[in-house]
Length: 254
Length: 362
Image 1 (tube, rainbow over the protein chains, first blue to last red):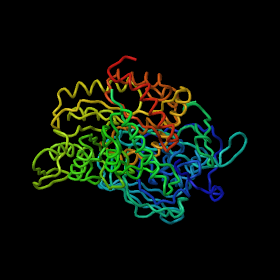
Image 2 (cartoon, each protein chain N blue to C red):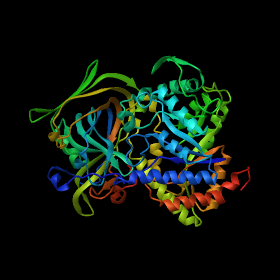
Image 3 (cartoon, helix red, strand yellow):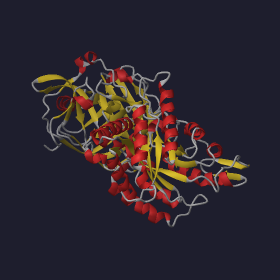
Image 4 (cartoon, each protein chain N blue to C red):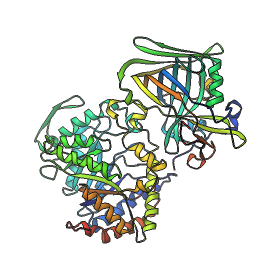
């Protein structure tokens, strides 16, 4: 069998978000701009991955910065660091850390989807030869990254991997750490690809231990209509997902 | 219809000192038996870094060993990766020529370009250009095998005039194939007069459509080699057992194991968006079959496991949709004991193969 994650759950429970309930309504998020940078990361990252999941071969991480011009809590920008892996047979990105540009957005994302979001300053800047993003928390820069030399590609070539969040979530009358699948949809309007560059990533600020970004893979920037959906799948973080997954509703629309 | 074996060389953890050797030795024993039983071909993949899924980075060595312990069975590269970071084309021409000589003219050469970031990234190959480099390689290879001297100046490689020796044993040269996983690649094969070495499983209707288009297109091809290899090969699982239920359950376990392992790989497109890898290819299909809504009896359409009659019926369906060859995966992570794999081969040869020997109708 493929190897599994090795996260010691007690070491992270204190900083997990707490989901209000698993009945949150979906958010429609039109006109979003997504900057994604993918890097291979060293072996050993399985210590950050719940035992329910398999590490990717090779392990890799994605930096995601998304500018949402419209949302139920107003415009905001969200930066995330995701460790990519497998939930059973499916590629998924575990959200290690997230920073939202407004306190309202951070609260809503924590309570509704279990994102470990905290408020901070997030910039998303488009220049002729690069798209840059920075994240500042408590006066310190914790991320400085860029897509260099963007070139047009087809949106059909881009495949965004669904996220999973690890959060305290209520189910059957018990609130406990659970993995929640956040499987957003994307309608691509425009896409670009370029070279990923991360000048600074303060890994501990993202709940990522001493994670280092190594071999750059690719960077993309897209314009999409997207959403944050109703939660359908809830997983026990300590049991392989093929045995520990619970479907709590049949469809995203239900 | 001809039958063959197909090897990924899947090695389960923990990797002990002997475990990889055991898997290779088991495979060689199976090939030796298959040769005696009348199977026509054995194919081996070229994969790198694919933990547990495939420990077969040097198929030419495995195939040479196969050739040395058998008499008739043909040996096939399924495939050799035609990307310069993986294999220099001169070395491909030389290695394959030596294998053709050592096997007494039993070589088949499948070509391809890799479909995983795990491999492409490992060799620091550019996913954008693999199709182009493959195209260059397959156009050069027959000339390198057959011309007295060869010189080339292309986009991906070049060489001054030299005599590439030795020459292949077969005349004019071994049959050439293309690995076909993504829809449309069978047309690339047809346009170049190459065999379609299908590496996807199941689904008669879809395959029938693609085979028909391949046959139509290859009639007007411009062959890159000295002859047109108008053949369609597909891959299948094989587990044949006297008891149909046992055969189906064991075969399903093997298929599920294989699909689950395959789904752990990082497809090129997952990590590196590129026009060169527009299709999601084989992996999403295998993911659905491993755990999704397709993980049902329907996912077993056309799969060769069960009792002899069920296996025969499935293969007759493949024959009817136009498949010329079926190559079987017979294990994954050694979930089936070696004795049972050998028994399955014997039963298949006794009860199923004769029905295909001379166009008999089942």
